[in-house]
Amino acid sequence: MLVDCLVVLMRRSARCLLLAQRHLLSKKFALNEEWNSRHRALSELGVEGGYEWITAVQKKFISAGLASAVDVDAAVCIAEELDQLDDVLKIVYKLRHIETTGRMLPSTEYALIRLLLKHHKTDILLAILADPINYGIFLNEHSACLVIDSFLEAGKITDAARIASCVMLQEMFQSTLLNWLCIYSSLRWTELSVEKECSRNFRPWIYYQLIGKNLLWFSNCVPINEKEVGNIRLIGSVFFGNYVLANQLLQTTNIFSSVATICQSKLQQITIKTDDVRKLETIVDKVERNTDEKLSDMIIKHLKTVQNVETLDLKLRLKETCEGRQKLRDRWEMLNFFENRLKWEDMAAVKAEFLKAEEGKRKSKEDLEREYISEVFHNKSAKKS
Image 1: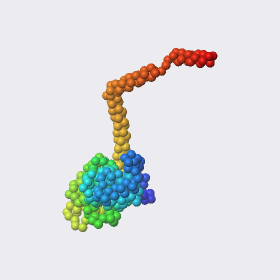
Image 2 (image 1 turned 180 degrees about the horizontal axis):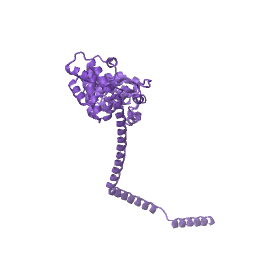
Image 3 (image 1 turned 90 degrees about the horizontal axis):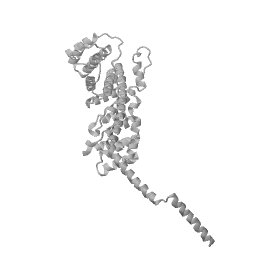
Image 4 (image 1 turned 180 degrees about the vertical axis):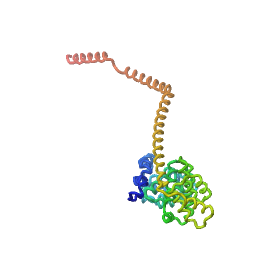
């Protein structure tokens, strides 16, 4: 992804360095240590031996025709090796086609996505995400961030944009970080050449509309200034085909030259041009071209800011949680003070009675001395006689 250039790519060097060093998302964000600790939790539940458990779940499907969602979840979560992947996919497929499919646990979807990412089976991942009827696998906020980051790190911009479209279709807009990643991957896709855009897509117009809708929807869910959001929405409206909105944005927004280049390239691909399209082309052609920073490079700054804010927020929440736990512990001790005092008093009374009984059994020092003296004199008198 890095190109050795001194002048042209100077403005993009920071972004490329971020991508090369996996700074879009930190390594801690993947929660690998926490995820690996799941085996300890499973062993506490009596689930041990990945191969044996997966085989047992398969036998349940073969013999009884069904297995519980909990058994399937344990099988998917315990799987680690590449040769277990086919069996896990078959189990998930079978669970999807029985009456209890609605009981599939969110951890099942999450574990399968992590397993596919671990072994770099991204083609299978994209296939099952595109086939929810047969597999029922959907992204959550964390898994979506991991998948998009993995594709961006590998330079698979088209696949990252596809995941952003999946997130948009799921209407999953709660995570600010995920919203920024989806905007970034969609913008990166619009910057690709036409050949790369359509290399893996047989119906490019559908792709254009999805990417356009990504930018239009996600731009409403992030904190951003009017100038940047106007440019994002302009690209989105052009790719989505809403040329009326695009004309309105051109009248009210200061357009970046890099955005004008993207819009111009897309408008030139349109074969049947309406009056709105011709008007757009005329206005876009008049935009002054300079060495403006790419819009996707600007998004990187927002990504770093969001991650820093979220990290600080997590630290504050952790501190508040610890303080809250301590307050609850103190309150519990205060509320149970009298109950505990009675318990301690009862225990003390029992112990006192026990000690008293033991003392009754014990002989005093004087009694022991008398017994000893009498025993000595008795032995001496017995010897004399």
